Length: 361
Image 1 (cartoon, rainbow, N blue to C red):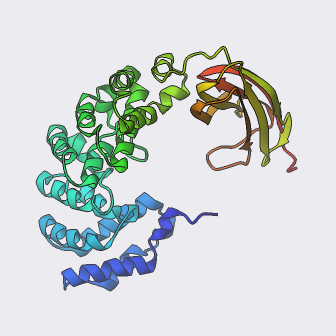
Image 2: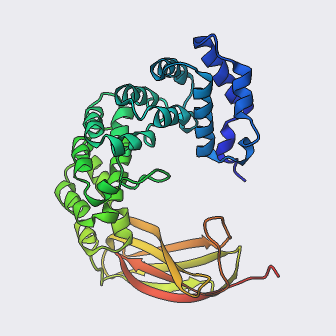
Image 3: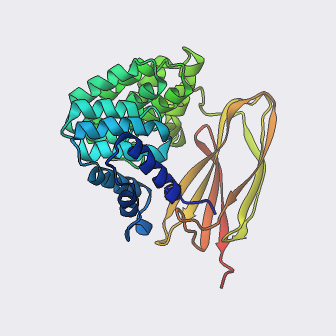
């Protein structure tokens, strides 16, 4: 089993943090700080709660003005990296919301070795115009981390973050940043732009359809952004977006030799295979399978899985796949009738039932 992310904060990690602070602030009480982190509540805290716990205790053990605290933390942060260093940004989010100028400068520093995508959202909510103006400047920066922050930070539905309701309703300010970044050469930035557009598609699908219509075919990088941004719409089988990607109905293609497990047990894999056949070259095609999962109340929820979205330069193609039915924290399986379907270009071509059993008793 994978180690929980929250466990990155080992005693050695916190001791190293305390030492680095001590090097830049002689009065810092390293022992008291370390003990305050590993208090009675520590074991019960999850990742983001541990970040907040560290931030609060940094503030408690740095009895200085907010500006002086930031001077120290900006230097110390250079020795800490990746997601686990986001307690620096959390410090700004908690203690700097009333000091826009110093906080924005700090987030600009902290994001270059980690990411300020969560913290910046509080400033968008409180200082929308000022923050979005700053993010436009970051979008033109030579530093890809700042450019990426300008997009990632204003995603309307950023996972594990507070939503931005105004941008869900009207993403016009977000689109201004996307227009600046859509031709960015950095894949790191391109992914954020595509994810931002995908967020927008969930509330404003026509805006993203129009973006794809206007930008598809201009460059290889923009084509990638358009395709990745359209993944939710493609999964939904949106006819307009399918047409833009030349994924319309494909009557020349037949599915043959569809074989699958008609009975399996919870914790097993569902194995299935099928062939695509045509009298002509199959060509550009999107092939998916859908599992209709039985829920505890007798209704169904479905989930799409990608098989292929490329050009097939032959008249036939065989696929062999499997789908796990192991119980997970994110999905519990229920005994009874389930369904599997094959989609071609968003159209359901074949759908069959299978039965899930429980032999654990």
